[in-house]
Image (cartoon, rainbow, N blue to C red; front, top):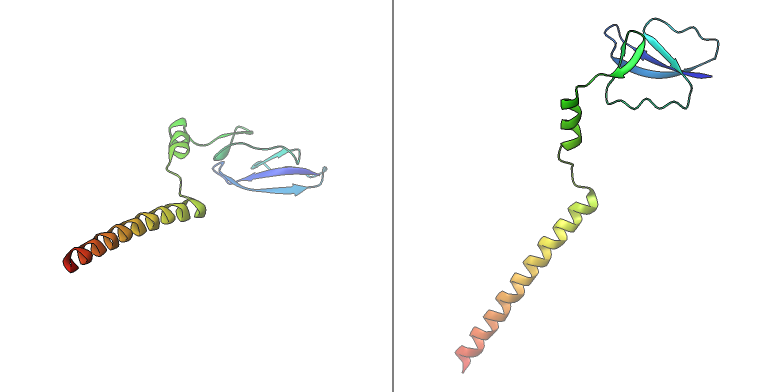
Length: 105
C-alpha cells in the first residue's frame, strides 16, 4: 500500500488516497509511503514535486494570526469579570451599611 496525493489541473492539492503498490500514478498525482507527512500549509504539485504553495509572507500571516480563546480561557475571563463585579457589589453594600448606621446615630 502507498499514499497518493491528488492535485487538480493547476497543481493545487485535493486529497490523499491509499492505493495498492502496483497502482500507476496519473500526471496529477504524487506517490509516497503511507507514513510520509507532507508538511506544507498548501501543498502544490510543480514539475512532479510537491512544494509549498504559499509565500513566506502568507505563512507568516497564518503563524502570527490572533488565536481564538479556548473555552477554558473564555470561562477564566468570565470568572475574573464576575469576581470583579462581586467585589464591587460587596464594596457598595459595605458603603450602604455604613451610611445606614451613620444616619441611625
